[in-house]
Image (cartoon, rainbow, N blue to C red; front, side):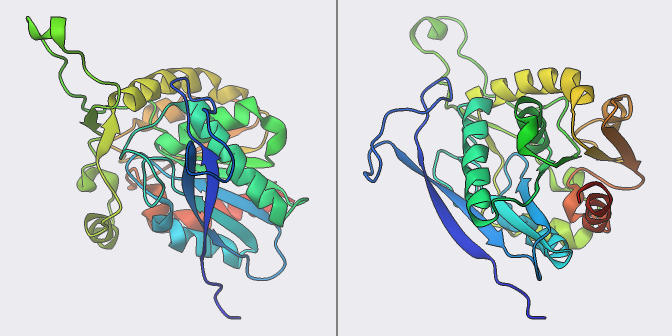
Length: 291
């Protein structure tokens, strides 16, 4: 069977206001519109459902094409969006108006997927910070999904923010919400696989930026999500690498819920879908839990 080519879609969305809600803007004009880049991979044969992979901070969707092909071979159609400020989507690098903006964008992606496959079960896979977004989406919109996969959630984000002005300067100058700090994505902490490390380091679309407001919102979201992880009402798999130095595996290990299955994988680091065997692990779990 021929390998399907990934197709590119740009979704025309509205700009956000400071609260992350839809801002002003008229359809089909450039003012107030925002372009969200999405790669799509068709299933190999009749689709059994649709998967959306939500990438980590500083990352982008195209890096997950190998994982998408594993799922496509199991007859899943896969969408790989670039969140705002990432990859080929518009926006200041690393900036976000918060989780309400991300939920709106994921809604747009899910609506696009549903247009192609209106009755197919939908699955979210979230990686790192994307896992927190996916968990929040699932707990606020449980009827929209058939299953959820959380990969190494950033329970305790350790972003490096610029120092606020001190002394007399603080009277005249404030730190702008869009001022850029750093995610702190050291490749040796992200990945244990040497080939994957080399690919990350050579990828011009990955970055290490996070805005002050995006970081502050991530801190708040992480605290909320840890408390709500056990409340999910749909089948949920949580995978964490035992050697993850970015997010503590112990936090994941301590979580419990009637629909939550936690597995800690020996020898693996943070960026799990680029670690050996994890895509197949997720594929096999989905085969058992989504019909």
